[in-house]
Amino acid sequence: PPRAPTYSTEWMWKENHQAPIVRILPVGYNCKSQADGSEQVATLDSAGTIMFWVIVELDQKAREISDTDFGLNIFGNIKLAKSSQLTVVNPQRYMNPEIITSLDPKSDDVGLARGRPKEETGLLPEIATNDLEFQPDDPSQMMIATDTGYVLHCSRFSHLGNASPATYHSSGPNEFLEPLERARHMAIPRDLKFGTSILSLHYCPTDPRFFAAAYNDGTISLFKTEDNIPKTTFKSFTKYPIICVRWSNRSRGVFFALDASGTLFAFDLMRERPEQQLEPCSRSDVMTKTTTNDGKEKVAAPTVMEWSSDLRAEPKLAIAYDNGHIDLHNLKPDFIKQERNEGFFVAFY
Image (cartoon, rainbow, N blue to C red; front, side, top):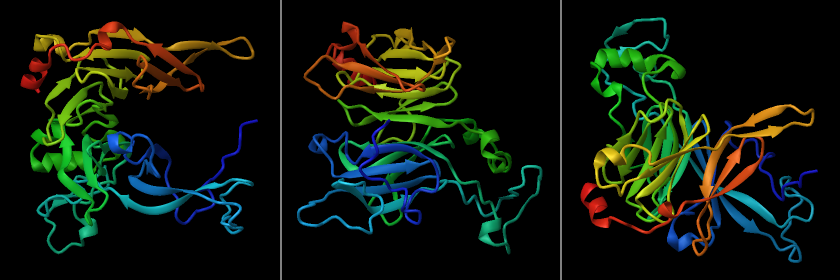
């Protein structure tokens, strides 16, 4: 049988998440000053709530164990203590006060907002969140992937929660609609909304000025932290959602993307011609088949990928599957080489 957890927050129903948790990370895991260990963990749920937990080690001999803490397992000496939380909201939740759109998707009622409560005027649906990343040079700042096509930039210690720039976005269809038409599109249910979901984020480990965002329409955008529009967008190389994007932990010129069909793409930004950079330099099918107890074959779909953490050894890419299996992949030498065209990368990006 599986081992029981040392500590569980299940009993904290008043202070716990009220939506499925989509990401859990050590605070500042990608910051060099905290890479060896963190005493805090952050959890993000699909409704946009981020909770911060402090890892506390208890001394049983000193009788620090409490008989009122129902989350602690017998003989356990590690617990989580909630320190703070924040909730992100739709950056366009309150629209231009001159425009009001009914929340009923079947209604075309559009009029002036004067004299009506704020809750009834231009109130857009709440967002769903899919991923969380900490800024490597400042772990108090976070990037959050949403289903609106926006990456939200938040600060843990700001009373408003916002950092600058507050949002990052690709030039989607919403940017080119007339305000009235845009209002109609953004008021309908989330699954039909005009816009695309961001499913995965990742900072470049070797150059923290850059991060990548993967979208459910099969595109990838590379952002510079100081600019709210992408430096480059990769599209038309797959028709499936990009479920995970990871920058190489050895070279800032190489990153990998995994789509929902089980295809792993590699991109090389060090190619001399820009048109070559926008196309994958390699693609591999990583979908696997397993045999069930009754002898039937079942396809195992990949769900996420991550790098090995030991930088002294040859880098390996771990891919997790929906059946609980994990594959470990070695990389071709071309993807391990250090910067081959550093001057070109700096000039172009």
